[in-house]
Amino acid sequence: MTDAALSTDARDQAASGLGEVAAEFGAIFGGAPTLAEFLEILGWAIPENSADTDGTFRAPLKFKVTLKGNKRYRSPAESRVHDLDDDLFVKSNAHLGDLVERMRSESGSPVTPQQFSSAILEVLRTGRVTLSDVEVGDIRTLLADVPKKRVAKPKPGDILAIPARGGGYHLAVTLAQNRFGTALGLFDGKSAQGRLDATIRRASRRFPVYTEDSSVKDGTWKVVGHDEDLLALFPADPEIYHKPGAWPGIVDTGEFGAAETSDGTMRLIDAGEARDVGLQDGTYRQAYPSAYLQDVLDERDDNS
Image 1 (cartoon, rainbow, N blue to C red):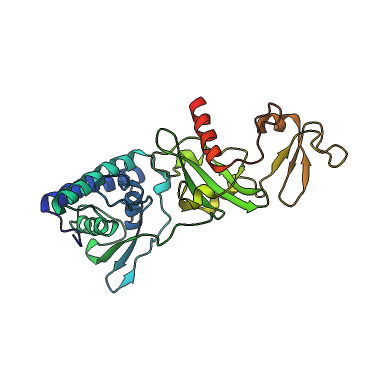
Image 2 (tube, rainbow, N blue to C red):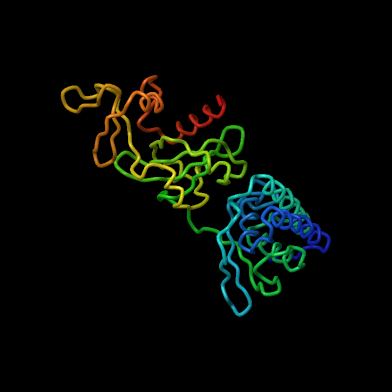
């Protein structure tokens, strides 16, 4: 199977379901999605663990679109997708799961990302998905933009999806890499798809943590996006903390402890900050191995 030669029934079923997704988006925002927004929803909702796919699907799947005149499509406006809750993604995932199941049944082979993209193009060409910025007849090609290699090192602004025990993902943003390690800003809550939605975005945690990036390098933690606006939610130079009397006669760490930035600047803290960061009860750690941090996040959610 080299393309998405869908049966009429399979194509129409997918078009009906995905048309409803676009219509629901329009009802939420008062207008139809752009092509970029529609594809962004599908990219997050792909059935990456389905037995009907070839095992190479990774969310978020991105797409390259060429329009009439060999013009590359670019989004005309800022995406509103991050303001959606998970409901629309769950519905989209169900429709896409049905689609790849039909494709596998009809072809006899697991579905590849490019075959999936071809199927989505067929669905769009039915005209049953209303878009705000593109006439579907002007779409010439729609290709899956599959990375050729895994990102080896996270950069400031990279959004990380950290697998959670029992399913879903914890979310974090890379803040810095310095002599202390890799600083992450964490968010409360979990996402079923590993997507930083508006609710989780508003739940940033006060204190960043330091870890190392082995779980990114081996693919356990996925880089699922990049948004440098998130950096403003956290300290520009994340600190580590030292308990009182850490270096007697060498460095004054105060009555309650001190915070240190990566350039060595020390700041004495008060009792409230010492309590909040965990110095007083002994729960604070300067850095976490990434696998252990994943366990800590699971325990946090279990106890919340």
